[in-house]
Length: 557
Image (cartoon, rainbow, N blue to C red; front, side):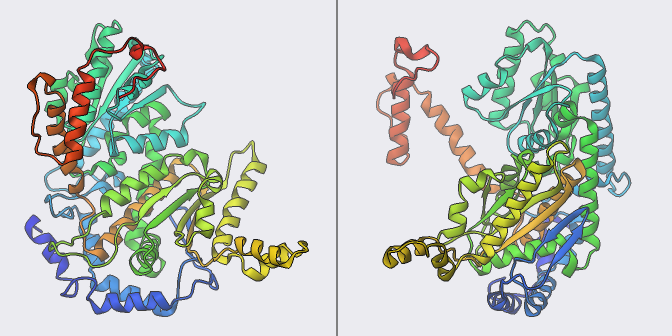
């Protein structure tokens, strides 16, 4: 299937006239609006070791029938087959999005041998990790990358690091100079391996930080800087040009999207820090979810049903956000990982033909681990006028040395979910204030205690938080995103919205460096942007006050 024809061929499976005008969408929206949210019927799907409990989402026989008709009309079967076959599902760039092949470990299904190459690169990476462990030359990894090159390693290492880490790791993503100096503070450059992870090897922040790290190595007395460098990229010549030896460059296939790169050799820093076995386990869990997504009927398919619940909440009921409440401190970075996965994939408004989708897409993803979130924003979830759907995530098994703590953690998770659904009526609140003698005061206070309830949520339960479980969880959300993209008719594998700001920034950076002596310049920007360019130039090129270099003392603008 050619690049130019893919979107049209998939669209041929759908009704003409776009999503919003299709009879299948109208029937789905009507059934969703009429479906009760009462948790009257248990709905739990077991998939790849996870339990996905959708009991507290809207459900009815009519909604299920309308949803199946909608998925057929939107061509989900054909799109799913193309995804797993390596078809050009990223139709705006004419590329596959074949991250599923990486965790399947296949070696013969891609005619041009790309899949076999990816398996060989993964083996090279594992060999490099073994040699590095055996030599014990490096006590610290400085991981440089941003976006998909950063969030996956952060998530996995936070989840499985700690006392058992093989070496410490510092992450450097932001271009802010403070981020660089904080990342290298206290690190011995002679015992540090710098891993530069960038698919394009053209990302401005990553290259700037990589060059700063190389200068830091030289200033630290490292004689052979190249021995302290490794790279993960699809642009091998650019990595060589930076000074990374070929033996320590690991090739990422061009058909792996950045936000899916944790399944590729971009897991190098994970392997160096917590071991190759963590990557193997994550890939096995993700592969199990891939199999479930391909084989389970739609009515019992966890990614499909999770996607449908999201479509009801966002596109029909108009909820503009989705809260992620992971009841695990080790999943600290899950929200940011899912923010990129969902919002960069689905944060679009036009379909494959360039027409407006016509319904709301891509809710804002936000949250933090429980129970911290309960003391931060759960007030808003319970009693605000708008509220938001919540994905609760928990595990049956906690830390073996703290069973009481895990029981409390799980109790809070279940209680918050129930409270969001049931709410608290005025009559119930009046019983709580019955001890107040003044009836007017009691009635007034009771109104403050009312919880509207009727707020939807999903509960995803892992047996325990291990690499296999995390891999299955991430693949669950990947496939949920894919299903929603098919229904909305949008491409989840490009990110044109990221590019405009990048181009503008390169021009503004040059303008910020123009000497004040050049006089008044008409930058051609809006009034605010022009003002701050001139304001910065005047500040940056003025003599520094004496206190400006004193740590902890900031100079004013």
